[in-house]
Length: 108
Length: 214
Image (cartoon, rainbow over all chains, first blue to last red; front, side):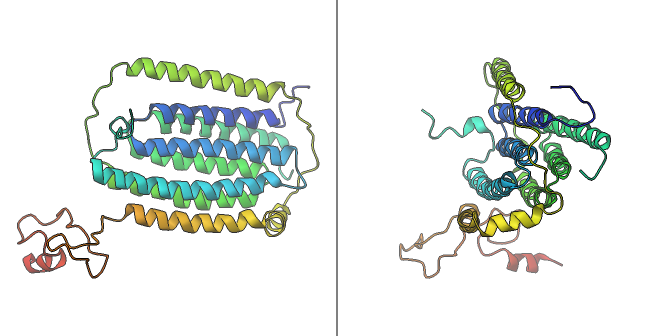
């Protein structure tokens, strides 16, 4: 593979998606604010979407099935955000906190 | 490709830097309001990447759904739950951060190795330009018709579920007498936010507010 610096290779998009996904995983593990956990999940979903769109454009240019998948992922992410934030509001009403370390009702 | 490849490369570099730095800011910034606005920036940059990938419809959907709906929803949630609280210290927090950072770095290395060692079948077929939206519509109404309809059912379920979860507790029986309440929408008495010394706190919110106003 010759290294051509004027066109973006597929691997560039894959590497960017890997960066985004790993940042999201780290934030998911280490956040103590529940809203930030939801934001990290959105970051990970966006990383998956970048992968899908890159494959759709580079490998499947005529039948763009990756773009259709990305639209479905966006739909599910919107539903997930709505339900997740509703759960968060309900938790906040019951426990008066958003600290993830104190949501330990079902934890051994 | 409609724009020159060097321009495309420069746009890719700039958008990638915005996405990576924005994602790090979302995760690392102590103030969560800044994190939410940076998240909107990340979503917009990802939409720009979609434009680079010849996917204008998905870029528009990304801007509408993520920036317009999800990010605004997150901002509203922050406004509703943003109370200053002193988080209790956890023993071994720094060690946990370092360990999870090492795990994420390992995952990143694995993903990079897969991405750079797999012989991708590039160049694939010539990508569609502006006809991508037409092709998406054909997909959605022919071979992806069932997922499309299921997505509408999912959105309805999510909407009803969010309303049920986020509303206040509902008493189906009267607390004092134990009889079933005649209508199920009696709310718990609200926390008085504006009224300090205006009569009974449980007797409705609007009437004392009007009376105490000079």
